[in-house]
Image (tube, rainbow, N blue to C red; front, top):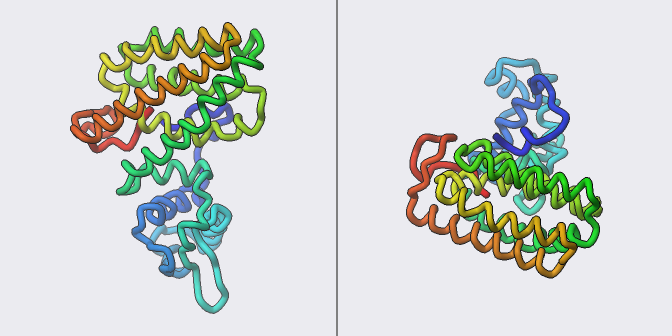
Length: 259
């Protein structure tokens, strides 16, 4: 499961151009193509992927739009510096989860969550209406019901945090849901997969919900801080011990997915 599984609109299948852009994007983010490198020419890529040149052109356009590539006449298609990538783009975020330095990225993105989500919880406490509070409660109950199920719990936990962002009534916070959820789902696969951790996690989320329901912004913010600190501690433990075996890989410590 990824952030895209949580989006309301789903397409039956990605286009060839999107599939190729995704494959090239993963290679670029993983530094198989380093900043400044030229990628293969249009004809070579068409032969490699067994598609037409027009499909390759469309795939390259997608990556140009995300800041990963630039096309220069007479030079070719070159990988742009990392500082120019659209790092907060949902696709780039997803591709980065396959990179070799995923551990570092997870911690950096967790720092971003720690800067955003406590304030989101406070805003939700101030602005949440009956409908949004009900949605938060629904996903809390789903967490409780799925504490024995890895995938079910991950989905419910992600939706819980998503519903808090939406309860802020602030479209700029809502626009960050892809960033938050991509990071959250990735780390949850590490920190929440053992059943004991999932059962332990429910009370911290219930505290967040109760404070939002009561309209206590300060308490909601503190409860979210405590929850994220717990997530950070679990992530550090799992990465240090390499003891977290997840269904996505079936190998110890190799997962790139978390809370």
